[in-house]
Image (tube, rainbow, N blue to C red; front, side):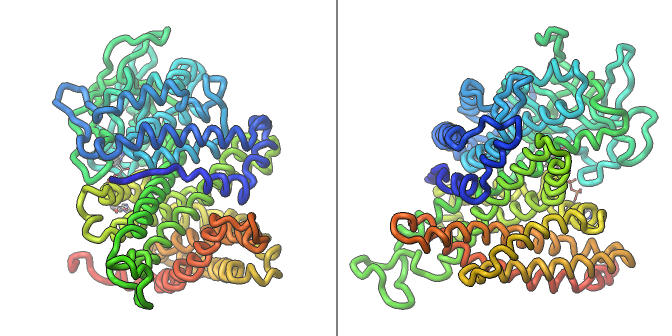
Length: 599
Ligand SMILES: Cc1cc2nc3c(=O)[nH]c(=O)nc-3n(C[C@H](O)[C@H](O)[C@H](O)COP(=O)(O)OP(=O)(O)OC[C@H]3O[C@@H](n4cnc5c(N)ncnc54)[C@H](O)[C@@H]3O)c2cc1C
């Protein structure tokens, strides 16, 4: 049976010792009152909720799954509803929402750390509030004042919940092919007809109302993505005072049987002249929906961070306990019939890989959350723009790099258990199954890589990437003279130079043949991911090294382990970039030459 301990010490290390997050947040008027104590207290309490309420439902939720008897009501697994009631009673849905709508107004940085723990504890359950928060973000940015007054306080309190309805049977990635249509009603609302599939949390028994954000076409809409509009479509039509009126024409047709996240209902939603109201401008629905999609992309990265952490914790404990064979260098536990498997170099590789990816991801994700806070509320426009650019550049990276690593890391956790990992009892195979979807939804990782290379990097002639590069360079210059930091700083600086060259080369090639970008994009994103990881691992190593060098009480085992993990990352994981760069540079010919008929 798996266990989960909220990694509060590491969260504090990242937030306080590496990022100086609270000090930066205090410079923002919205968070001037924040203190380390408050942030720590919220995370400690949040951690208790996750480990005591959500985690015990993870396995049972996976085994029972959601059920649908065809009566329009989807039943979530036992305990899910009670956990939702406790979540609401604790005020957790309100954490980062605006006080204007009943929220507590805490920064995203704290909210995302909490989200990580929720995902470690129970990814399937966490998707319900995750989508609700996305709907809140979208309506807050693009809703009319009336829509905001009606929906936002209820989404914030958790009384109502939300979804995002984009996908249709014939269109997933290519939303330009979307067919759902909206016809005008005499009262200014719209009647929406169409079929949406794979809608997470589309129907369930957690709340009395579900607020769907639906993409559809107006009658005169231009073809393609320029003709898509966004609508708010409640499951139950609210009366003007917010009380519930008639059932709307949006109903669940079926739920999917799927590989993982069984506790989250994945629904086919049929819209049969459902009443909806336009959100934002006509035909600009995709822009409005991007608010929700971007937040969700970061949220998906956090799902994998959560899974990596919990899988690591369990596989590390198992490796210290499981006795098998003797160490190659001679017995390490001669009094026992065999050594614990943690003596074997390859078992250590598997543990370190998980740990390096999880802890590196934590630093990256929290830093990105900090950029979101700065972009949202720094009084200085230049600061807001600079943070917004970094957020935009690195959103596809946090989504794809963390979720690719999440699948890799959970697989390694399973492998540490040998055959026991493959059977259900230990809980590891669930993490692998749950982690797999994160590479697919919210735009597949291929699409993230095309977004990064095509739009975010080549689309602005590398300006945003250069801005991140400047931060890396400043760190390298600052630390470059410290010999003890050379093992971290040198590979970081080298990778930065190689990435600059690779970007220029791909930019030139892509001008002649767009397939060159398509062929290189996935490798390219992984190289950028490693640059980001290298930067944060070098920063973490700097703090840990200082403590270890100080010695005595300062050199806590925590810092010793951090330093060892940093060394492992640079010695064993970062060198992967050499092969990735070689592959990215090899061009599209080997992929595109063969006639499709010969596959
Ligand atoms: C469990 C689950 C939950 C989901 N939740 C939601 C939800 O809440 N709301 C919602 O709207 N949708 C949801 N989805 C849908 C999800 O976002 C889509 O499945 C995903 O975007 C991919 O679309 P698709 O499945 O149609 O694959 P396709 O678009 O058909 O893609 C198939 C393959 O082709 C590749 N491909 C496609 N186009 C390109 C291209 N231009 N260049 C290179 N490769 C390309 C893809 O990367 C992929 O590997 C969910 C899906 C699942 C399975």
